[in-house]
Image (cartoon, rainbow, N blue to C red):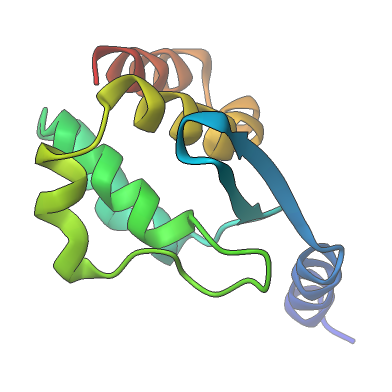
Length: 122
């Protein structure tokens, strides 16, 4: 096997390890997320963050990463405005921090600090 095939196999095994639960008592339920993300999945999130579009970045994180217990997406692109304008920003920030927490550990300290600051503001 090539290194690329090994890398793909590793990613597949990580995803097969199940979802991580984030209890959300304010919503009387939980949000789940996968244990790993791809660069493609985070590209738009990072672009929004770099452009200073904090609310949109948080909504994008929820759309891309929030799942139900069966692994199905909880939100669609059409939910973006609702997430941005009709949901408690503190709860969204806490969920996004939890979802991206492990990912933050993989970033350079400055990048991680920027993402945490964004989530805290919203």
